[in-house]
Length: 233
Ligand code: ADP
Ligand code: MG
Image 1: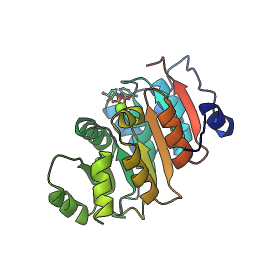
Image 2: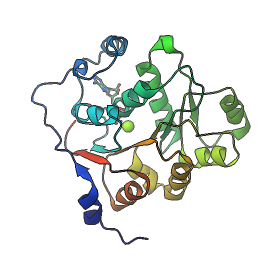
Image 3: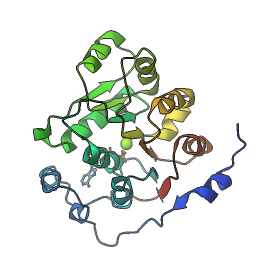
Image 4: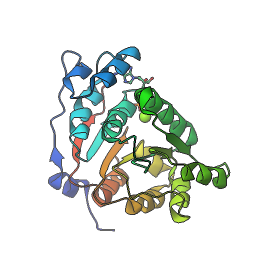
């Protein structure tokens, strides 16, 4: 252990004053394609939630980001719209990888990304979790996927057996980082992060900001900007 303290980390992070929106911020103020805005309207997403309003400009600009906000505050769209914006549907490399603590959460995130992705783009998203045979998952990966969502242990297994290749990865997301650490996934997350290209963007989402999350950020993120809205929905 480097003996790093949260204070030491805070000193070299770039802090962004989290804006406290008085009026709901429309998605239109982001520089997203009209078709994406139309899809959000169709889903009934008429305004950004506070964590989306604070995170999306930073994430869309390509910065690493640590975002802390309560459950139910809309964190999925805060990373999904950013990773989808960068996605090249014509390339069949895995371009985004989302780590989640449990199968249930991985499936929820997969559903939400599917809803947010434009249907005409034919984006392939795979959910890969433990507790089911690995071979059929490897076969699915063989056919290509743009986005992979899964639990750290199973993703580590796919990387080590060569079925998940990350050379084309642009975005790594650690969702519910605090819960993944509570479940003892630090080493598995570290393995996955080390297998990703150095040039990737890393987005970390968490409901709380314990020491383990600080450690993860120090080791695997590059000058992350921090947004903390712990009390807000
Ligand atoms: P979190 O990950 O912070 O717990 P979710 O991403 O699961 O929250 O979002 C919670 C719920 O809010 C989901 O049902 C999602 O579809 C909905 N939601 C997210 N963003 C918006 C928005 N801007 N407008 C309306 N509903 C939204
Ligand atoms: Mg979530």
